[in-house]
Length: 78
Image (cartoon, rainbow, N blue to C red; front, side, top):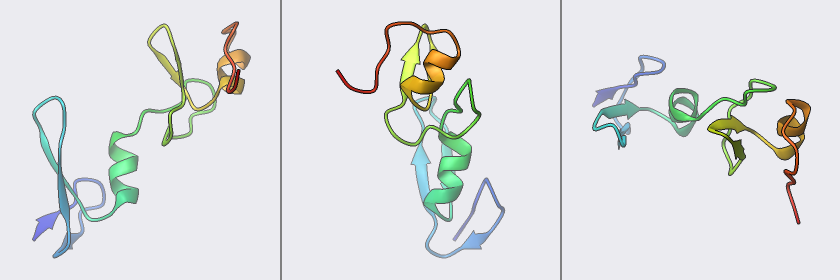
């Protein structure tokens, strides 16, 4: 069993994620993994779970949030 790094639950069905930074992190659910690993939208603050939109190294959950932050020429669809 491993202890979840997000919530502290000691769970027999936990899983480990090996990050690109060489760390190994244990989680008891995808929800906890998302809270710990997903980037945050620079405009609205929600977790970017899907593709999102990125401009100049800044992550947004969607093109709408990127445009609201002043990014021009970005669309969800072409």
